[in-house]
Length: 365
Image (cartoon, rainbow, N blue to C red; front, side, top):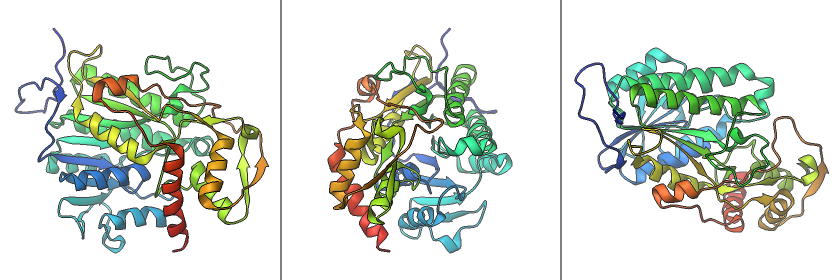
């Protein structure tokens, strides 16, 4: 007998949901990581679409928290009102609330799920950064493994229609088989960050298989755009160029990345959320998708595009390959296109121009 995609609560089981396209009207959605780059933009989109949304973040100091609080402020979450473990309402949007919470805080997370009765969970909270994982490994285990385990358990014991979670193109390691396909083996991560994301996929598969929790993992490819992370190339390069400082170019510029604009990522996440895995899949209740632009850009071409957008020439300093880095990322998005009828379309020039316009305004503050 095939598994059917339905979470089974401890009491009062519901009839099985058959999967497929779901009507998201009047749904309550938990988004973790809403002080972060992608989570902030997703929260804005879901709020605009009219969904009752609760954001969650621990607002850690991995990078400058002023940017995190600026993102929260834009969604009406006032810094002075934030109190750990307490849900606060947005001062701007009636359908948005926020809670500061660690995913590792299992008792409070369980209470949140029990009290709020979420329909959907979008887990974007994680300790990010490939290089940072080399010096701070325990942080990745706490957040990305223990925290994700708590999310899975909460979804298992509550009636969650669909768990969507962030994976990463890093799981492909240094594979020279391009473009990267979800069918490729990803058994050789070259950073702990990548290993933690692969572990998330395995954990999600187990919960889908054993407990019929519908899960979709999204392998993001080099996301960029307004309010982006300061440790990512666009922000680092923009800061160096505007400040008259050298841009650090690793592997002597012989790198390429599948840069994907944030709006394209958000559209893909929303569409994936709206398409719940079903028993017709090879692995019932479980899916993985790449979300990338499918047009890798050579690093030197990216720098030139940034120079044009910023209106200033970059000074370059060449460095060897960094530990944990990969030479190329390149997404095969065929499965995403077939499943949700969507393919990212924002070209690099257009995306960088939008980013540069935001950065100049942000840098003036």
